[in-house]
Length: 477
Image (cartoon, rainbow, N blue to C red; front, side, top):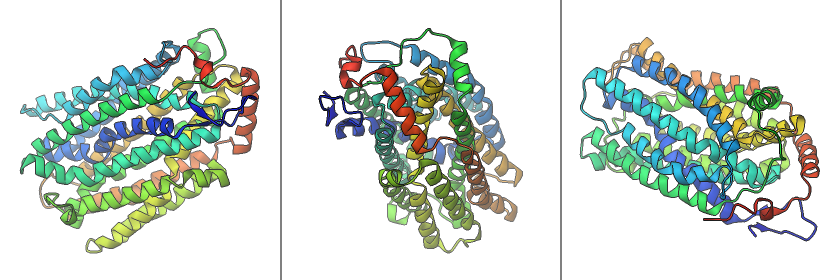
């Protein structure tokens, strides 16, 4: 049996083993070896390495979201209807890992093509990667909602997930710039290519670890399959709608700021990104220390969530983070260590928010079943993941448009106007988007006290929680 503290009465607060929580967490580490590279380096790679125009890249980021608008909810519907010996969601981790790794590597293969050929290649590989991301990450995200019926345990699982996710992000932020220099030997394109090859192998292996160490336990009550009723249940889910809107603004904030990092340090602070040793690489040190303090903040999530309502905590932390981002607009370029300090404070503050948000996503899935009688876990997560991908795409697209609007020209000395645009991208614009996300969360109606009532009523409907026996067909391969 894979649960601790089980007793003969079927304790409803049963806790998952450390190994299972960690095993689930490393799946998001697998995602972040690509996801964080895309957030931080992809726009820079397309403009300064692959040689694409910033405005054309911006259009590509937004246009390709039409594919996600179809594929994300479709994948959610398919996953909810999957029924195998391994469960609904785990099989996708097993079979989707290799395509995911190959597509991620292909994005940075950098073939020598004409300008139009490069743009077509970018469209094709970016679209394929987003499809592969959908196939593996929607089931992965939904898996958390069926590992345990306990909201508190899901918050704990979510904490493990984001400690692992941002540990991988720390590795990306710390080592990508020196790695591409060392492996490329002065050829930045070759450096990116070899770095992403390493990340692809690691990602595949970690997804397989998640498959092997996790189990699905929460089964929906038997109900007639109906696309119409599933979508009706989701769209009638008020808490889900508020988080959907908040996700768009939040990930726009993340995309705009992360997309500006390389430009901010290359053109404003004066770091050309060619340092071999980490200690001389201002960009890598800035990201490394910021992500390190973010992991420390994530580690505080369970303690904070046990003492404060998740919604209120999310609002306060997000507003404080917006303030630290806005401060960067007034920091002069020579005050590098002040930048590092302010960033470390901001990332520590924002650290618990991803885990809080994903635990709240799972709560909305419970709320939907409690209200409508239909459990559509993967559909709920897929639509929220689409909101995040839309936010990232629009934010990245907005970054490209801002660069173009302010007269940015790659690999040249920038005008005062373009420097101002880069500074706004790194400070005021993301801070404003963060506040917009807070406004959306303000209307989130579920308090933790209500979540506990919903959790208890659902358990009563389902009958006694049977641990691993509830999914007796899901024996490991």
